[in-house]
Image (cartoon, rainbow, N blue to C red; front, side):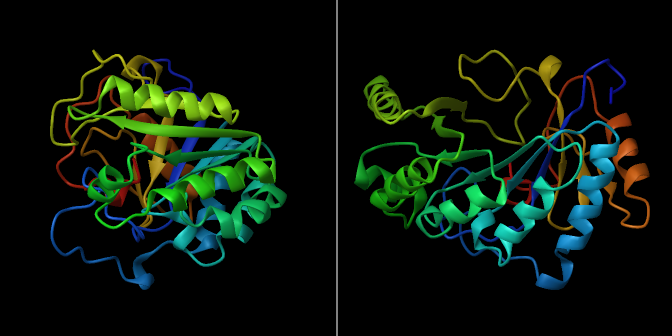
Length: 266
């Protein structure tokens, strides 16, 4: 499937919840955060309808995000169902890692191919400051459990901001090298700031290489992370919803002012 600018669109990111067990400063709004009521969240049946239609149109990779996707009940069964959809070759998940010790082996058996775990520092105190409540060791344990479970690719995502030192990055890279993990540097960005590609991190990709669309947990499709363009997902005609979304994908991202990062799932 191609967009209006000739880019191959073969990747669907799905936020399955806005709930999270951490409160990372660059993702979660300050102060109180009112979660979406369960009645407004897409059902697994609706998510599978979207995945099936997307696969028919050429999507072959699905990533589950949140909030924290492992906080949603039945997530292992959802992974298994997505992995069984004809045409889906990769099922991935982005997680903070805290719940991976409980779920890693089940996810591997269910068909999860790739897991990305957020890890911004190996300093326990700084980790607590960034996450506002987290324990570093719980994430380390989660990463190692995913490795021991045999998940094919484990990527460690580090958000690189003004306070990130080269020493920190070297320490995380050494940890990844020692454990057979892939390290990815994520440029710190704001949805409300103009999207730019002149950074030296691994992600986000330049707009010219973007191959994805996003489905929010509330049933909103976004063609671009840095855009206010949206399509309301129609479970009665998921194919048309996805085609409309791809058609709206802009040549270059600008800003997004109508959604927060925790709603979109990155």
